[in-house]
Image 1: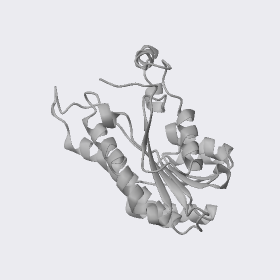
Image 2 (image 1 turned 30 degrees about the vertical axis):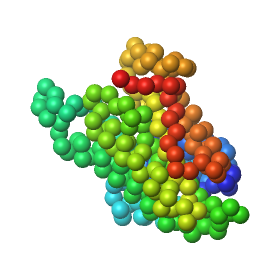
Image 3 (image 1 turned 135 degrees about the vertical axis):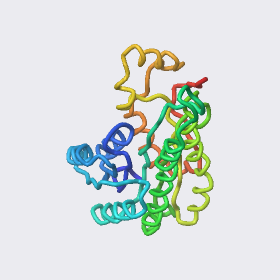
Length: 251
């Protein structure tokens, strides 16, 4: 599958990794529909890349169903789905204020894991409608985990659990969708310069970057976007998790 023939839906496409992916795909000739809760930012990015935007709550079935239908109508079809929407809390299991708030844990799981599955399953229905390529391929789903799924730090119990779930569903989802010609891949980023990290003091950013073995810097969201584009075009990649982290192993 070529990027310039791709019709992609990208969650979290109004900022961070999702925005970088949307821009890279559009620059490569793909049609792009951004799904995000931030209408102002989402519409701005969509206008800049010549794409489409639909305000979406990834945890809501009706919202996602409507967004997928909108995207399919506007682009003519859907052949790629990239899930970048997510949140992160820094809360210990037991902290100075007591036990980890259960609502924060549930919200993290709901957005990062349930939301990813919600979009993936509904996008898969639409992707399966495509005419197959000679090798049977109809499209690809790319989900976003994190290296926290493997070596989460203190305060990341909710985030690590949610991303561990994203990793865990990669292979079985790939097997489920194999007969429909849909590949499923997962990217596990390290520490990237997203809006959340950009708001940290410069000395904190430098400290985080110093922990990365090589290259000793924070990841550029554009690098995530290029990897996602590579996965789209590399048709033999399926059912696997790719770490992109400069060899960082958190402790």
